[in-house]
Picture 1: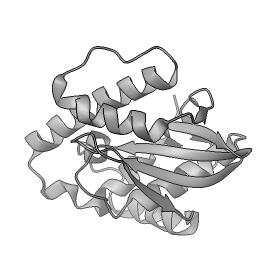
Picture 2: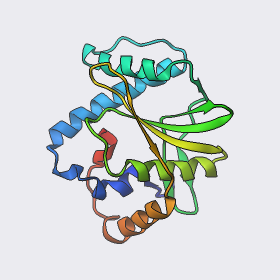
Picture 3: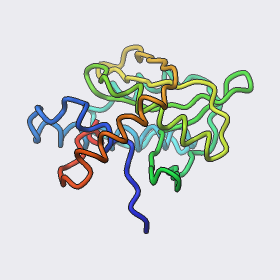
Picture 4: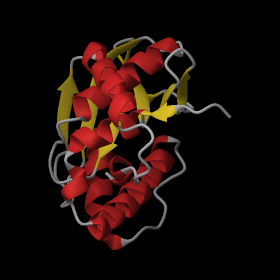
Length: 182
């Protein structure tokens, strides 16, 4: 397999997450993975799998946000051979005939890199044949309340600059990708 660079790996040096205790990031990653799996099952009409009660608020927040949205089949991981770049959004749904790219978040607050992550996914999804109209990041509420929606304008030019900087300064540095935990 070719050596593709993950979108989240590109953005990790700019995220500020390297200053967070690795054990906290590990637990956040486990939470993120579990919540995403449950959300995928609900979107796919497989029901709501049994889960750790500590995740219930996130799931209720997701269900409330989901409402009756019409989701496309979950896209496979995107690959761009030109840039040797790969990324995977969490979902795409249709609204008034337009495709909305979605990424679910379980972190406490917005990260400064989310807009660039969305821009990269927007680029990759469009390259894969999806006609993306909007980038929507959905921060699920731990207590089960209303999800916070972040809408981003695509700015692939800025993401591309980050990609170039990453490849110049960080590419061969072997560190754990902390953004995957969130």
